[in-house]
Each structure stands twice: as structure tokens, then as C-alpha cells.
Image (cartoon, rainbow, N blue to C red; front, side, top):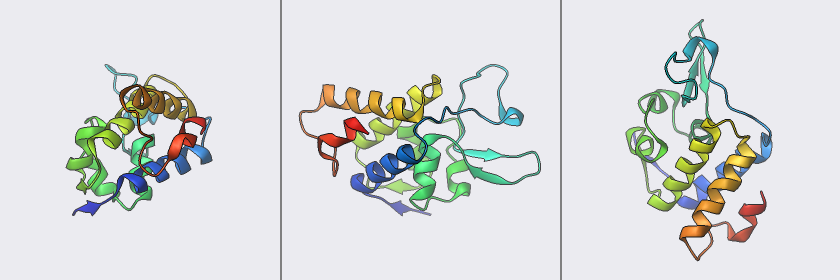
Length: 142
């Protein structure tokens, strides 16, 4: 399945998810943790009883925008920029995909979702003189 998303939709959903859970520090479920990579994140969490729910920050954002858990699961172990296409997402610019990748990396390093977003926005601002699509400068204050 394909999901046509705009940069504005993705950035808006990212902001909303972070605003709802600013102090969340991502942790993979114990039953999914890798013995070799303690910082591995999962787009989809699978409980021991087989139930599923969205997992990391990027997985939560994409699921909120309608990407199914089954399609997100196809992107497990991939970084955010590649995961978008593997999950069937089209229409998102490389810039916004990179924003997601930066936020995911910082989340994986144990930062809160609000810290991860701020660092991602700062990294974006260092590369671009224009604000992120649909955001203005207020995103940095999120």
C-alpha cells in the first residue's frame, strides 16, 4: 500500500506527538531488546501475547498519519529515511525525512522526545536558511 503524505503533515504530526509526550524516553520492550544493540528502536512493538502497537517516535508519527502497523513492520531495523519508502510512504522530501532521522537518532541515544525534536530542528536550521515546511520558526521552541 502507498501513503501519500506531505511535509506539512509529517512535521505537524511530529510536533503533536512530541507535545503529547515531551518527556518520553524511548525503550524497546524487554522481549524485543537485542543483546547486541541496547539502543535499537522498533517502529512496531510486539508484546509476548502477539498484540502490536506503534513504538518509537517515528513509528508513532507515521502510524498517526495512517501508515499501518503491518507496513511499518516492513521497515524494522532501517533508518527513518529508508524506512519511509519501505513502509510505502511517498511525497515526503529528503529534508523532512532527514529531520525524522535526526530525531530518531537522538531518541535512540536516550534523549526525551522533546530534546530529540529540538536537536533535529537545530541540525536542520544549520543546513537550511528557510523554516521547515508549514512550521515557521516556532518549531524550534516546541
